Image (cartoon, rainbow, N blue to C red):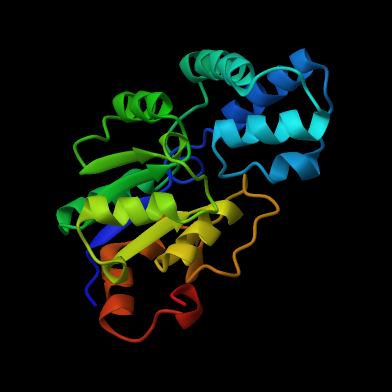
Length: 230
């Protein structure tokens, strides 16, 4: 099957918003007077804000509504987004996006982030010119690791799942791609911790390894790990 489309996660793949989310979440947790362990926080990676808030409410038996906590967290996040001078695209990802675009690979953004956050990122870094569609997991019924977001992203690309590749950095996202039957490339970085890559078809730490000329042969031949597609 030919290589035709890439379904990009955003957080940890296109931009490193995790430090901003972390600051926003822990400021919110402080306001709620709860102590979220690193082990619990690690399970939130790749999940929607609503799912995180639902989990926190259940875990700590809170009286606040998910909407209250979401609103607080997003206010903090937007402030960090606008004012943190270290916030930028992940090194090498723009070159990769442009490589796909030059080679007529369809690009779809499939992120658990809210559509507001997605729009902020795309406007800040002028990414709309490269992507044919964007989808927010926050607007779906199910959150990663459920495969719904990547199933819908493949539909937006108008390509069979066998022609698509997901780029993810989290356990939840990799499992979602696996459940959707889509080949997954896992990206690791110094900011990636305690994530499970066992269901990824390929694991890289440099985006140049995922350029069209390196990935297309995996689709045209038999190089893809079968475990990523079963």
